Length: 349
Image (cartoon, rainbow, N blue to C red; front, side):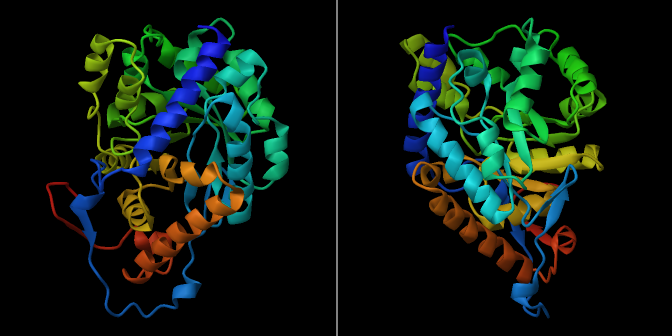
């Protein structure tokens, strides 16, 4: 596929995600609604003194939040990435960039240059490349270029086999991907993060990835952007649309993925993304074992406007998270991880 077609595909994705996010229903399958915290009517805490700080991969964060990977067409991506980077720096949170494949192959960098690091010198900044691209002849070199181009602290390798399978132009051959991830982990001077894009990561796959040298797992489960549905919306034929739509609900709910991966791998860095609507969902994810909580589609509209809009969006989420800590009697994230949860549906805690 030529780079103009790749760029147009990203542009289509952005339009569809923005349109679907505007009318997105409640829980949408992530599993957060099955959980409720036991309320503490006597917290004995100062709300303003609650400590939300944490760290991942040696970087300090003022709140356990990640602006998850998102991208767009070449005409819009540069402004989006600038707004996100400026907001992440102001907030003291992490940022993952969208897939860098188009920019690296075409020379249209979409704002993913060293300028991003200049705008956000202190944040945990994550580069991003698709796992399927590692099978290309220069895949490992491409990964190094992705890191170098934004001076990233780590590289996200995103796993999207379902999305590729339902795309007419998708990468169908995934043989040898795990071996390439292992080779990359040995060659790359920064840590690797393995991320799904909306269908979740199972404990079995998470263990394979960690054994291959991956440092952090981002489960990115069902509940966020449903890429099969996105591809159905841009399908060129009724048959392609029908195939993609059948998989619109495919995958592991985010809450279940977080819980099961944490139980299987108690020491691994763990990011929860996929259908995180607010600070209460973020608190539930941390209680289930996440180190950071990611959000992408929920902040995308703000990112198209300004860095101030992104900051305001996350200020609301941070206030909600702080109140969730307060009303569970949790002075910090370590205590939140021990807060009592009540289940409203069969989910083993």
